[in-house]
Length: 260
Ligand SMILES: C[S@@+](CC[C@H](N)C(=O)[O-])C[C@H]1O[C@@H](n2cnc3c(N)ncnc32)[C@H](O)[C@@H]1O
Image 1 (cartoon, rainbow, N blue to C red):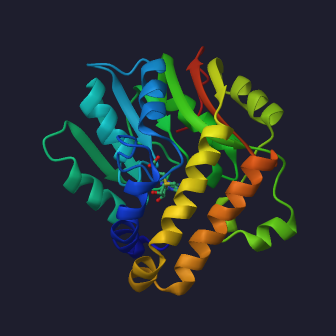
Image 2: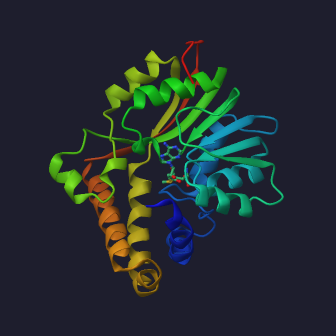
């Protein structure tokens, strides 16, 4: 998706997204997580009043605004898309949220109690560098809460069929666990969420199909076809076990002296 397309996408998909999630579970997330899952991950990571939170790849910051309103925290959201941050800023009026437009890495200045990386680990081909940099942005005892798409790398054929395949980098669980250990991040909690995410993908497909004329009128037929194609692949892969989704909370156990 190009930067300037975010405003159109956000508007064109709003109503379908609202109807796809169970009542009360859509809070502006651009992902397969439900609000209950976002809140429980944030609570497990220790987000509370006075806790400093860095939300990497926050998008329009649906989860970030929700967490800040529900739990109270000092919040910085960062995304490479200026238009996503523009939307986030407009919707965060009255909340103690700050935002920056920046491509990660490098990390923003400062040390944080909690780093969030929701539904975007997938976009980073080099997870070792990413996790090393995240670790450097956490104080010792600080937590990273994230979701991840687990599996063997996509084959050439799978890459061919997935729109925007340059943002789809699966990681085998064993590789992820070794990487976390190398950068001083200790697993505190992990849970598989393939089933619940598979249900959300299927509901999104149905909702996009139900509103396809309106969505195509805003975005064009090609963008709608790519949206549906990507969601159908995620649906197949999550159902068949080709990809598994996990939510993690990991804790920084030692100083690593890594570059930001
Ligand atoms: C799937 S959206 C997730 C947004 C949000 N975390 C959520 O759960 O609703 C992924 C976001 O990551 C951003 N992104 C991808 N790679 C990035 C990078 N290297 N640095 C900063 N933002 C990035 C995209 O612009 C997009 O807004």
